[in-house]
Amino acid sequence: MADSSMVRFYQDNGYALVKGLLTKAEARAYREECHALLGRLSQTEATWGSARALAGRATELRHCHDVQFHSAAFTRLLVDPRFTDVAAALTGSENVQLHHTKIFVKPAEKGSPFPMHQDSAHFPHTRHTVGAAIFHFDDAPEEKGCVRVVPGSHKGGPLAHIEEGGWHLPLSEWPLEAAIPIEAEAGDVLFLGYLTVHGSGVNRAAEARTTLLIQFRDPEDRPADDVHRSRGQGMMLRGVDPGR
Image 1: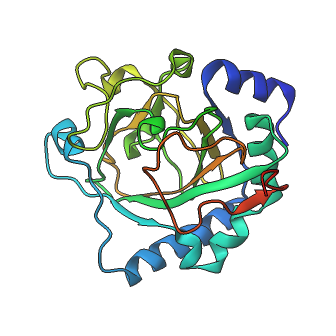
Image 2: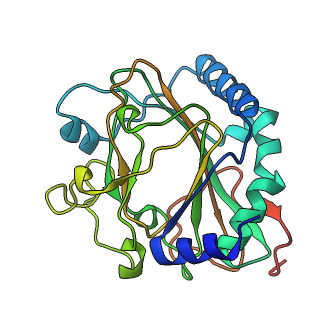
């Protein structure tokens, strides 16, 4: 459960890193599950066009949406109280609803970066309670292209994004290297508000970087536009949907 100091830090900075939410053994098992799932799929490349410009060379990013429909292991993780209790505390609601899930794997030595952006540009909501939990299934030092954030950037509200190349902020105004790297270990979970400006660098290490993204919200926070749907959207992860 998130304590009051973590909640205050999240409110002030727009992110919070929870150390050791999963054990090392659990993280290793989920890592194996991720790579096995991607091995069963034929189309997994998801590099943004703007990411290629940012990297200045050919890079790769493997991903999969709606992972709980592919493996029951991820279904169990979605409702794990260690995760949902923190999500509830950070959103300020007893009720936590799923928006979507994704696996992201940055291959060794050539894993694609993400330019700086806000997730709100992809799926705006009316009350801005949407958050992301990034589960790290292996270590993510800066060399592996860890997430980088601009603390406090959520307080400026939604920013205008460039649509071409993947809905990102202007590269010259929001350089990746100016953001703070959030290095993590296997089992750590990074919580981010969807207004927090963030990105990530190229994986230059000899090992892949493996993460799971769970995007969640207060069920009373409705989409501002019908622009993003997923098969699992609306599933209750904690509590109830007061509107139903």
